[in-house]
Structure formats: C-alpha cells, structure tokens
Amino acid sequence: MPSTCQPPQSIEAAAFRLAREAVRALYAELVLEPKPGLVSLRDTGSHHDMDAGHFVRSLFALRHYFAHMVRAGARQAAFDELQALGLQAEARMLRATGGINTHRGAVFCLGLLCASAGWRVAQGLPLHAEGLRATLCRRWGPALSERAAQVRRRPPASNGQRAARAHGLRSAGDEAALGFPVLFEVCLPALRQARRAGWPDRRARVQALFATLAVLDDTNLVHRGGIEGLHFARQQARGFLNQGGAQGADWPERARAIHAQFVARRLSPGGAADLLGAACWLDAVTGCPLADPARSPVLEAWS
Image (cartoon, rainbow, N blue to C red):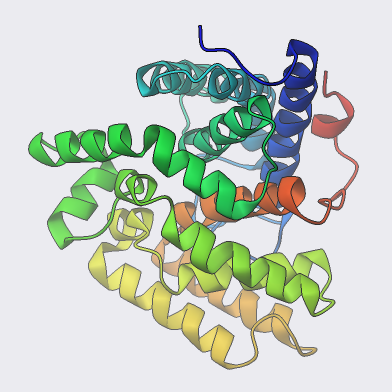
C-alpha cells in the first residue's frame, strides 16, 4: 500500500468532513428553487416517478460512499477500485429509492472529486479547485479517457450514451476525462462571481445553474426532448442570463416561467443539476463555507 504523508486520524477527519459537505451540497441543490424542470421541495418538476422524498432517501444511502472515496483516493487506489465503489453506491441508491435514479451523476462526478481530495489530503497538499482538477487529471485521467474510448466502441448502455452518440455530444464520461471543464470553467466561477458580488446563496446557485445550462451538453435533455430540447433549454438559459440572471425583483418569476415551459416539454437538466451540486461542494471545501441551506433530517441525522 502506498505511503502517505498524513497520519490515519487526519485522513479520517478529512473523510468525515468532505463526505458531510457532499451530502450538504446535494441537499442544497435539492432544496434550491426555482430550477427549471427539476425536483425541489416546491414540486416534482418534469418528473412523475420521483419527488423530494426519494432524493432524501438517496442521500441517506450515499452518505458513507463519499467518505469511502476520500479514503480510496488517500491510498492512491486504482480507477477500477473507484469504479467498483461507485457501482456499489449506485446499487444502494436504487435500493433506497425503489429503483429510481436520483443521484447517479453525482455518484460519478462528486465521487471522483472526493477521491481527488483524499489524495491531496494524504499528501499534505491544500484543497483548491485548480489542484483538485489537476489531481483528478493526473491520477485518474488516463483511465477515464480509456473508459470513455471503450464506451464509444461499444453499443450505448444508457440513455445518456445513446444521446451523446446520436448527436456528437460530450457525455458525462467525456466531461470527466477532460477534467470536468464545464464544472471548473463555467459553473464554479459563476457561483463564486455571484457570491463575491454579495448575492445570497439562493440567487448565486440559480445563477450558476443557468450559466451551466446555457453551455452543457446535457444528455438528459436530449433523452427527454431530442436535440431540439437541448437547443430550447440553452436558448431559455441564455435569455434568462441576458435579462440580468438572478438579479432584479422579477428574477424568481422569470425563472419559474422557464420552469413551467420545461415541465410542459418534460425537460429535466439532470446533468446541470449534478454539476451545481459539485460546484457547491467545491465552494465549501476550497473557499467560503457552504451556508446551512435549512434544518433538515438529512443534516441532523448525519453520523
């Protein structure tokens, strides 16, 4: 087993904190409203098979997974081990939700980020966004690139893969192999720019979500609405941003009007939601503390 620079107790403390922040970040994404087409505490968006309760049960099922990924990263685990941990977490999620996919994208994206953080903690290196991205690319980038290449050679195994293949889009696997460019170059900067401007957390997160939606190859949208659905979603997001984004007294009404249009078209930007959750986690562990979004059973029952 590779040696580390930090004692086991330091890694355990970091694993607990980083995993807890992962749950907090995903809860922050869940309770955010308005967000077009997505499940919130207000309504179920474009989904008839899931509600906020499914997401809460999923978070309980996943809360230890993120700590496992931190520990795996700390011991410099190979990608095959990270992938196995992710598949086990998906199975727990599906058991908790009765077979409904609530957080598969977050398991993949946020799990990899937790592993990258674990590696840096073990080496005594600071946690900052640039370093986490560099660690991900250096430690597991080649394996992620090979995985993405293998997926392209095989028949598509998921709705997202089929959508990406049919329209020449970047899948979640392609994004990971590139070090999550939309997350690090669009979503997180939009969140932090809004925070630096003094915007409250809710407005900052809505702004980051729409900035992400405007550029991401969100295959969830293509699966539900075809390539026209993706183009429509991007157009709506850009229009919202061009009208001032999440500022001005009317921003919630403008965002809810877009939400209504997404629901009418059955559009749900799950990929953008996953990146927003990851950005909230990055903001918490590398910058300003993540404000407690609300008192919740998920956070109170953490153990």
